[in-house]
Length: 326
Image 1 (cartoon, rainbow, N blue to C red):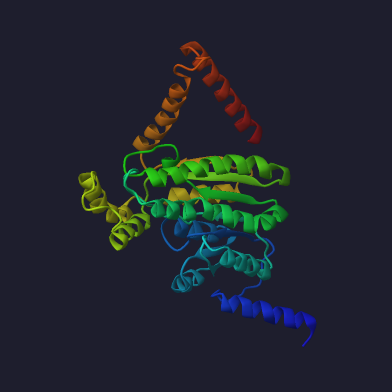
Image 2: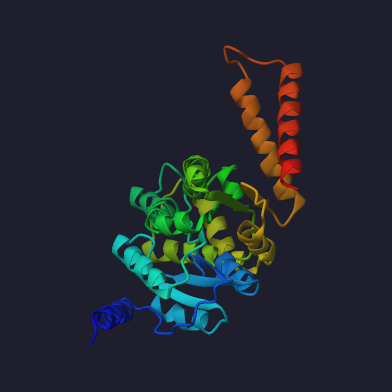
């Protein structure tokens, strides 16, 4: 066996031992490849379907081996199994994607979980779990695949949430993780500009997703709320409502936002996508109210006229930027 043959044989063994699909396909040079984590349900599944139907080859990141078969049955999709909390598995996924020969144009950090509970009673280990998946997960995966994205001058997106703007009772841990994604996106965007890589965040409202069922199962399995909780009424109402999350609005608009990021010549930095005008109104109003809270009573407090002047200046900047890219 030649040296090249030995190397290829070794790569094949590595792929099989790490639970990846044995299926391979001849790379099509016109197809850009995108990795989507958390691709087997909800938002990630819709993104995978929309991208794979519109000219992209999708590496569908899944957590469990049993989820691979369904993803592999889709056209222009190859499943890749890894846990976003496990650096060894992530690195093996990088080796797998490199071995496929398509390169990697896009990365969508979509895998996420939700932990709910009152801030003064939530066990610290549950908050750590929330951040391990939702914040450190995208951090690890992006670092691991960064060189491939830089090589292709591609695009990186992360699924945030309007919870990254809003915060409410019992949703604190989840909101904290999504607020962190907002900061992560801003910093990463500035750092990747030098490489010709653009960075984006998708901020969905309430859509049909398996995340509620997973949160419900976590609560039941771990029983992490005390029986004598001071928030028993809120807890019971939340637990009763979570299984209904999967019956919400079809997240096709979220998937279209992901497609626009990867397909458009002028993608936006932020994509707030809500199913109702009420959700959009609440989110925008909260941003405005935060601005007013910041301004109130500060040493250099601006009056109403100056605030409106600032708003007009920012609107003009936005309109100019939009016009220059059309």
